[in-house]
Length: 176
Image 1 (cartoon, rainbow, N blue to C red):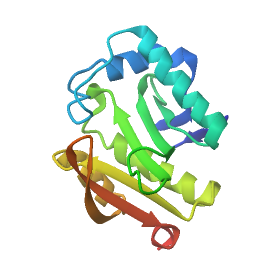
Image 2 (cartoon, rainbow, N blue to C red):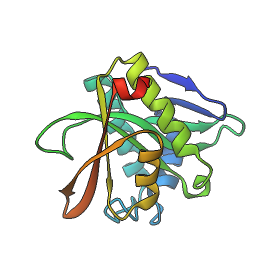
Image 3 (cartoon, rainbow, N blue to C red):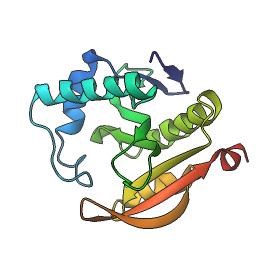
Image 4 (cartoon, rainbow, N blue to C red):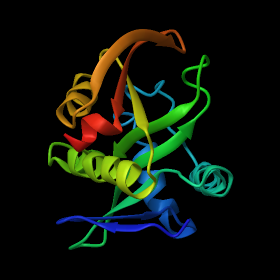
């Protein structure tokens, strides 16, 4: 895909094979997976598989999650960005905004910064008409971030036996 986006503090770029250690640190943390089915990864092979899966989304859909890199330290923070989602809402497909950060970066407004830049990229660079997002109901922080960046709550739905909240943003709402 070859995406490279910079904000004041962050670089958002394609996920690369070299990010495997960062992905492992992110996705092997049980606290990171508290609201993600509580199934953290346990091997570097799984980290490599995650990267390969995201990179195949770049090829197949022209979009996928991006690595978040700290501009100052060059540290792998996590990932954010858009994904063409085909599994969460079985009744329709959509472009989904998501983010996941290593625990040491929580509470620093990084998810908000990356989410806003991902929305800008989706609406302005990719010319998308709308972007969706979902969060499990008990994940108050993620739900707060989605509302803070401008998503409108649409409805409740169930995924993997969990109550989730569905959000949407249309380009016209972004442009306001």
